[in-house]
Picture 1 (spheres, rainbow, N blue to C red):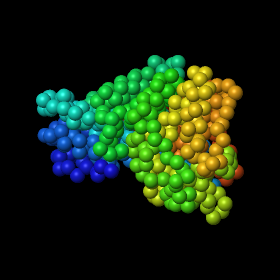
Picture 2: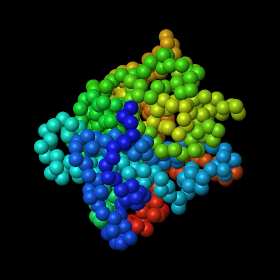
Picture 3: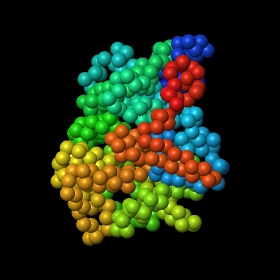
Picture 4: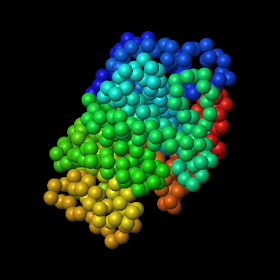
Length: 460
């Protein structure tokens, strides 16, 4: 693992705090305008200085939004634990119409701003003699990947899911320069996704096939991020295309029979399936003793399916909690949400099924499931139609990718297709319901951001 940045660049930390806490700064906010633009307080002189910024592990690899998991249906909590939780976690858990969550927003914009600093320096003219150098191209590719991957996560929270009205629907603030004096405006959803896709396609051309560490992106990671992006857009042909490209770079799968089901954790960090390593910021509600796996989800695992014992452990009260993060540590606060090959097999299988290629879809699904089943106990699954194959793939997608920060996006995209996934909670005898395609499936921007920028809030 690349260590956190320890370089001695002159970075004004107070400036970074102010910049990242809002994620954007309106030109009308005079109290911030006396802070110089970031390029004047960061003075890199060598490519390795820029690489050190991209290797700032604390910013780049561990700040993705746990808010993507908080409102999902992978877990539940008791009324007692709900009442003891932080107010913002409590209210997001029950989809309160007025709640916001600043932490997930500001952390992701930290990633954006670090990437923008690097990209701006690379194009400043100081490094022109190195433009054909693989190191220069690699660093630029890393920055483009990290910025686009951050934008993707923000889009899953603050944009409507991609659909026919994407050209009119309001998107996120696309910060692509490190100048805090640039006025903040919301893009459209289409512009948001165009930026994500454009950055990732450029990154594919620049990144090497092999990275020094899995905390750095490579070609497979950029292809995987594109597959995930296109899947969220319901562009299943392109999702399958880029999942296939990712798997051609790295198609390895772990055999769960070789894992210790009693270990805590049972899965190693940087395992062979990990293409790009990162994880979500901490939210206490997910974890034992609070967070319990949804009982219907847990019951859906076959007794011969090793995921049931690899992913979950039993609490003293007979409920189950999660232990299967690809982060590979026993610390509850590290939920992996990077790119892994199991996700890519499922995306490619879904693409095949939606294109009517049942045989290819089942080949991918069975290749994955065979590695998850008890040895000599696996019988390949069959389906008589592409629709039946798709249902199987979506069922195992839910079970394979639990607690990866992907379920919220799946709920939103699948509800646009009529899957009618309704979320329900019961707290102190009160029922809370999130119907399909509800306005609350698009998060509110933090009030601090609205106050500082004057951008439009999402409707309620």
